[in-house]
Length: 121
Image (tube, rainbow, N blue to C red):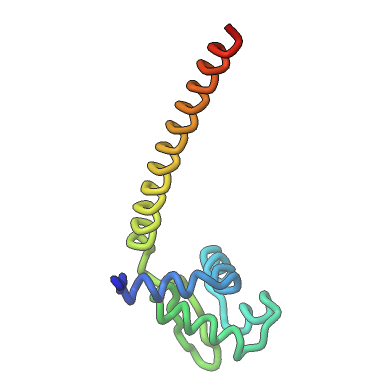
């Protein structure tokens, strides 16, 4: 069995598979935030939000910096070009398949119309 191995894509998609983590990314897209701010915003414990931030950090999507007692989170420098390219490649594949299916359906409808005319004659 062939397997597609790409640790970076695996880490990114695993990080993005959770609604809370996607929400954290959206929140950090608006402004940096402390772990405490994020925990309050998402109604989670500090431990819970730290786990989510840790997954995002491992994927390179978030960075954290500790100043005194406060750990501040920011969006990571890494962008999602490879992930977007992977999705786009698969989107095109499915679009092509649906276009082919549309052609088959159109041909069947055309034949059905022609056959209907012949029966009524």
